[in-house]
Image (cartoon, rainbow, N blue to C red; front, side, top):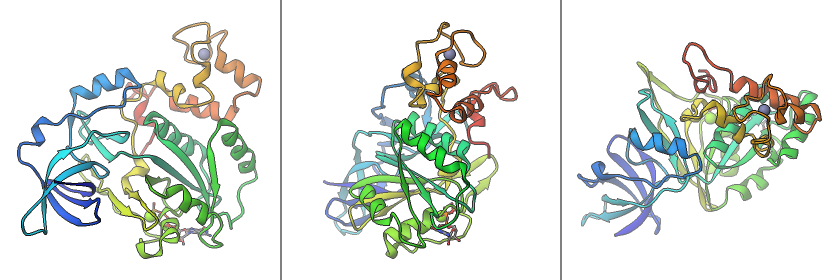
Length: 329
Ligand SMILES: Nc1nc2c(ncn2[C@@H]2O[C@H](COP(=O)(O)OP(=O)(O)OP(=O)(O)O)[C@@H](O)[C@H]2O)c(=O)[nH]1
Ligand SMILES: [Mg+2]
Ligand SMILES: [Zn+2]
């Protein structure tokens, strides 16, 4: 048996790159689908309990580590075993009863924004950050198109993110600024690029590794068939070691089962305040003796980030849940 990593996953057909560098089309051992269990990261206990009851759309995702049996011909293989998963980026499938793992064993979420064209939307950035925090991923914020003039208020906003503890890298595909530093961050790890369309994700990956020749300046293909959004993820192998997930659908990933009361835990500056409000069920809005509002008043928490928190926890009356609003399509 050989160990490998799944770099492409389609319906029943997978591409596996073995630790020795061979790339093989693989199928899943026939009876394997039925007896899948995954080890979950267990920080949000409630979430894990719910997840266990739901079906998995596809038992294997890109990023999964697998054991394969190579056929005698040497040109294909069979996946015999899936090794325990570490962190994964999960989304609800179009059919809400199912979940879909976009990328398994993800180590770093690279959230790309641009100084201009398109203008940085900090509320959107906050949503990506909450998503990454909820999945307990390490985050790197990349501010691309540093060659263009940024809105004035961006400098202050970046300082706020740094104060919260986020790592921010300024890059430009045009001047080459920050590309080497970005390479170092990606080296030897499994990362995923996410962020709004047009900010330069593909351009940056091409700068990191010119051989990739990713299409630039084109709207990524997302197929809408009925209520189901098809998302095809693929892992790109980096020459410097490591993999990058190129997943068009990451742009509109929805939070998997994130409850409004869990959102504050996904703001690193609000999490330590939890449990310090007068009311245990405080929603940090108009309640008296709220530790969050006190921190905003004292400027310990940025008012803009607080606004973001409020937006994300607004109850969406049409759906009875806040989660759908987090990434409105
Ligand atoms: N000025 C400037 N333009 C850039 C930079 N990086 C990318 N661009 C341009 O921005 C546009 C969009 O770049 P893409 O790499 O296609 O953006 P993307 O994030 O991959 O977009 P989607 O695939 O739609 O999500 C292209 O016209 C690029 O030439 C940069 O650093 N500076
Ligand atoms: Mg792109
Ligand atoms: Zn409160």
